[in-house]
Structure formats: structure tokens, C-alpha cells
Length: 80
Image (tube, rainbow, N blue to C red; front, side, top):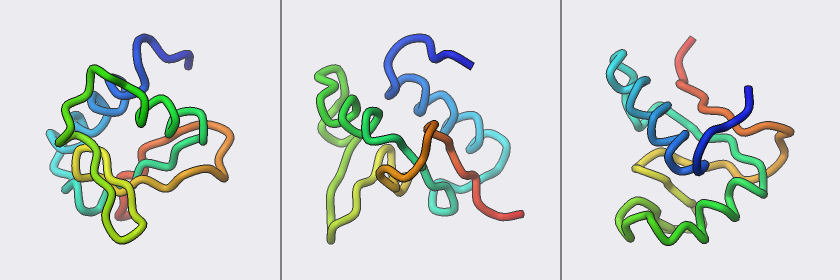
């Protein structure tokens, strides 16, 4: 499915929808293409608090980001 708007807006919507269904952000993982990671890092519309880097790990909206190794970006909700 083609994305509409920025990657950040799409991922934010997916994260919020999963959270509304009871999935905790701590159990989610964003598996992103290198292109989408680059878009997130360069998005000037994002608040500084939306992206964090600590101990070699990137997080978007408190969701762990795995960079590269995928053909299409997805939100892994964790669990079963």
C-alpha cells in the first residue's frame, strides 16, 4: 500500500492505533528501510522529543527502531 504523507505521520498513526488496541509501546518495534530512517532523521516537522538516540539505539515516539534489512517498513506489534 503506497504511503500518503511523511513516514513520520504514517508511523505515528500506526503506533497510536496499536496503542489504542492495547499494545504497549515497549513491545513494539519499527523495522524501517534505510530510506525511511533517513526521512525520519531529516524531518524538520518532528519535535526533538519524538526521536531519541541512546546506547546505540534509535527510538521514535518511544518505540525501538531497527534500521535496514527490510524491503518495506513495518510496525511489529510484538507478542503473538
